[in-house]
Length: 489
Ligand code: PNW
Figure 1 (spheres, protein in one colour):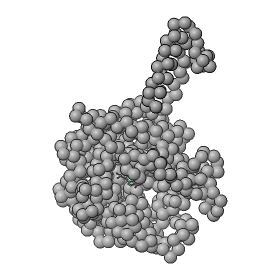
Figure 2 (cartoon, helix red, strand yellow):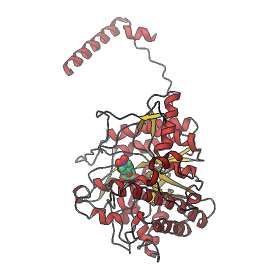
Figure 3 (cartoon, helix red, strand yellow):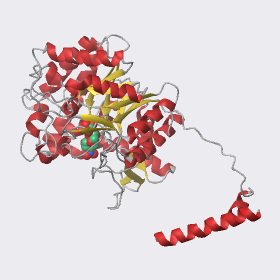
Figure 4 (cartoon, helix red, strand yellow):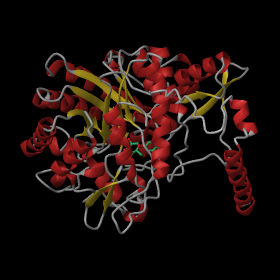
């Protein structure tokens, strides 16, 4: 094959040279209306984002901080899970991770060098309340004051997630216990009160399905339980209740002008073909497939189909729960990684999910199917269904099999390809007028990728886990250019 194409190219090159010598127009050029040697009048299309669009990076406490025994931090579910043999790849833990607890200034410099306006980080609940509730630990709060002060001094606006899965282990029963939702509300209120003069954008929970379903139903994440359907549904309810109580507590304790949202990874339903019938089907599917979380939050109730489907296994709730859960949000944050393809279908649902063939392309993590349009449809479906005042992409990124060269470089062209295509599709959403205000790339750094330990790298900075030295990858250079131009490049 190679030999053939080389021969063909050889012939073409020779013919071109001959044509240039004789002034004869080649057939291809004739069709373009140009004589040989005449150049095209290119009309570049700029994929510029709206003025004021916010670019950022995203991280999470347990994945980057390390220092798990320092300054009074309490033990978490993930400390226990990661230290349980067989639960994470290679027995990896977040004990050291990127040591960002000590290197936060260095990491903020990486952000500054990228030119980001914003940084999404999370707070380790157990540094603030080592027991999950009760007596706060001033050293924990001091630490986040230092981190936030340093970011602000560098001109970077912090967006803070209150719960990115590291749950204080002292809370009895974890998310199986309704009291945990209340404890979360108290912690959220405490943070809003004590950091709300500096932090104006808060997210309650990150990816409800991951810390409820994956932790308590599937058992892949901490605490690794496989509860029966009804009990797992109850855990999910405690998750959305925590979110709702968190919103109320932040509003009650933070100064006016504070904005509250969450970071959800709703199932992104992409119409298989962009026609009205499939678009409608994808919208129906979005509402139904996310009934347990985002739909319940945006509509302030469990939809009938959900309750009917679970019957006696449906979660139990108290009269005021949905007042909290349905609290109006200032923005919806959406983490976007992969698409779920949907088509119109007969039958009561009106849609069907199309299964991916085994040849479907994915990144280094086997679950990370590539579907750039998913970012566009994430915004469009949510906006069309629920009309939030603003949206953010709170995470988007991918794992690659990065290789650090002896010269200290990482040519992660596959990550650049992935990101460029997603950002192009996000541009479409912005250009169509959806209120998408910003984008956070996951992740600033390679880090502890949960059950995959350190085997999967999502950073745009490579971390050498032996020396903890950070190296910007090609994708960091690419992102810096995007930010500088506020456009897809
Ligand atoms: C998100 N899945 O997790 C999290 O918010 C991050 O902490 C994480 O590092 C990042 O995405 C990359 O995985 C997910 O299996 C974990 O579909 C698993 C899935 C999706 C998101």
